[in-house]
Length: 157
Image (cartoon, rainbow, N blue to C red; front, side):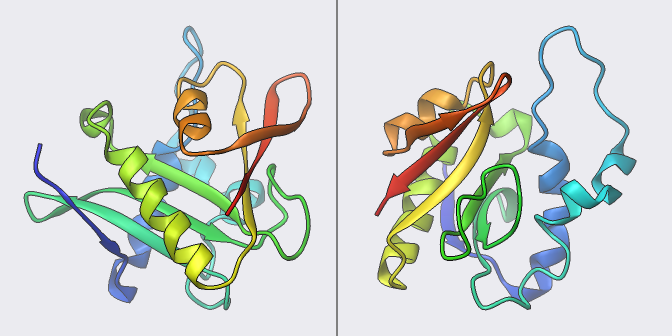
């Protein structure tokens, strides 16, 4: 599959509303939540006012002139928050574009950008049952904590 990875353009920021919904991991046998879930404060922390904070950074995957995935960071008090200097990562692809290496390419590009900007690490939270756990480990994330449902992971840049 042909695609390019590039930085997200400001006029594309509203697409994060779609991608944060796509990023919600739904375990097998569990009903998919209503799209209105993205208005919950614990979800809005990932996208509200994106681009207005100095640490906001996003890359997208584009295929056939359509944005099909995004990986972004910001310093926020989310599930993967470890401190106020470490940006937390979120990543999402439309289902039909998963399994082609696009997510890995998005993460690698974003990690290079973060390192170039002087960050030492980035963090994320992932549910233990999420198939993306292996991808996170493959790009260098290490488990640094856990609770009953999630791992907290850090990538040292």
